[in-house]
Image (cartoon, rainbow over all chains, first blue to last red; front, side):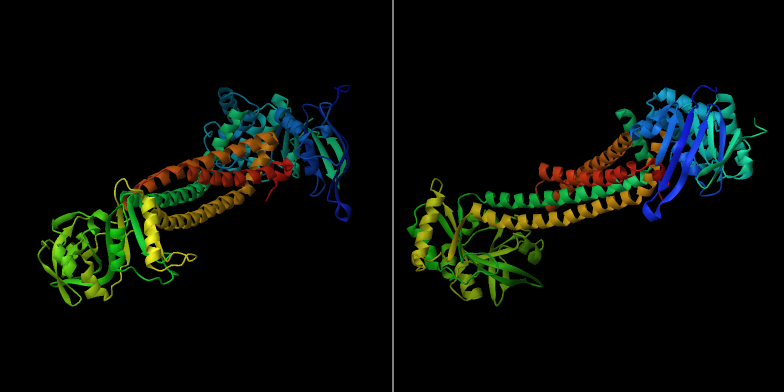
Length: 235
Length: 400
C-alpha cells in the first residue's frame, strides 16, 4: 500500500471565511492522507476546524487554497456538477442532525440516492430494503422520520449513506444527538460497515468514547493537525 | 432523468399535501373568480343585446336631448303635433307610438301598488311586442277622449287582484277611478333587471290630463315598414324634427333618433362597464391568491433550502434539483388552474341559470387567468429554489 496513492490526500489546504479585517482562517495549511479501508476519527475542540475539514473532504465545501486529491483526481479543479457526481458515485454522508426528508418514508429516504443514480424501480426497492435490514430497521420501511426515534432516524441516514456502496462514509458528529446506549449501537454499525465492507470511514466527533471505535485518531487544534496516531486497541 | 425527476416532484407534492393544497387553492379561487365574473358579465351584455334585437330591427326611438342620464341638457319634449307630423309626413313609417310616463300608486280595495303609468296609444302594444292575455285594447273614442281606462301588466294584476279576474274592475289611481279593460301577457325581467310586467298603460291623453298635467311626450317609438330603409327613415325624421324644432344649420340636434342597434349599444355599454368592474374586483382576488401562494412558498423556503442541501449532498446535480422544483410548481399551478376553470364553468352555468343570462365560454379570459396564476405559481415555486440550489451544499444544509 505504500507506493499506491492514498484514497484521499489534503495538501496545504486552507480555508478562510470573510475578508479583510473580519477574515477568519478556519484551516491553516492542513496535510492529511487517508488510505482506503481506514477508520479515522477527527477530534478537536469547537472552532478547531474539524468540521470545515470534513466538509472539504466531503466535497460539500471548497477550500480557499491547497490541493485535495481524491483517488488521484484534483477535486479543487472540478466544477460544481463534477463534484456532485463525485459525491453521488463515491461518498455517503451521515450528519449530526440526521437530515432526512421530512414526511417521507424511511424507504423513500433510502431510495433517494439511487433515484439520482438512475436505478430502476425494482433494483431501487430491493437495495433500499436490504440497506434498511442491514441497519436493523426491517419492518420500519414505511415509517416517516417523525415516527422514528433519534437512533432509528440515524440508522435510516446510515442506510441512505451505504445503499450506494460508497468508497467513503463521512460522518459529522453522528452520535451528537443521541444517548450513550444508542450512540454505541450506531458506532457498532458504522464499525461493522468499515470492517465487513471495507468502506473507509471519516468521522468527526468530540467524544473520546466514540473516537475509540476508530483505527486512527487525528486531533485538530486552531486550524492545524495537532496529533495523528493509530488507536492501540483498534489496530 | 426526466422520468426520475417527475417521480421526485410528484413525491414532493404528495408528502407536502397541506402546502400543495394551499398553493392550489390560491390559484383555484383566483382563476374561478375572474372567469366566473367575466363570463357572467359577458352573459348579461349578450342578454341585453339579444333582448333588444328581439324587438326587431325595424324600431326607432326618438328622444329629446342628446344624452341619457345625468348631465343631459334640458331639451323641449315632443308634442302631439310632432307625433302627427312623423306619422303623416314621413314615408316608410308604419306606426308611431307616443310615451308619457308617470309613477303613481294604484289601489284596488285593500291592496295598493306603486307602479309606472304609461300614456300611449294602441300602437304601443305591437311596437313593444305586447300581447293581450285577456280583455281588449283601447277604442278610438277612449283614446281621443282620454277616458279613464287601462291595460295592466301581470305584476300589477298579481299585486292588486291576486287570483281575481281584473278585467272589468275599477282601480283607483290618484284621485280618479280607472276601468281595467285588458291584461297583458307576462314578459318577465328585462335585461337591466327591471320587471317589465310592472306596467299600467292608459291612453296618452288620459295620462297627460290627469297625471302629468302637460302636453309633453317623453319619447316616440316609430316602427318602420318592411322593405323601407331604416337609414332613410332616420334621415327624414331627423330633417323633419330639426325643422320643427327650429334648429339652425350649424347647431347640433337637441334630440336623438336611435335604431335598435344604437339602443343596444347604449344599454350594453353599461353592462360592459359592470363587467369590467366585476372583472377588476375578481382580479384583486386573483392577486390575493397569488400573494397567498408567494407566502406559502416563501415560508417553506427554509425547509426547502435544507431539503435542497440534502439532495445536493446525496449527489443531485443542481439542474436536477431545479427541474424537480420547476415540475412541482408547474404541476401544482396547472392543477389549480384547471380546477379553477372547471369550478368557474360550473359556477357560471349555475349562476347564469338563476340570473337568466346566457352562458358563453370565453376562451380568452380562461387562458389569461390560467396563465397569470400559473406564472405566479411557477415564479414563486421556482425562483426561491433556484437561489437555494446555487448555494454551497453545506450552506444549504445549515440554512436556518
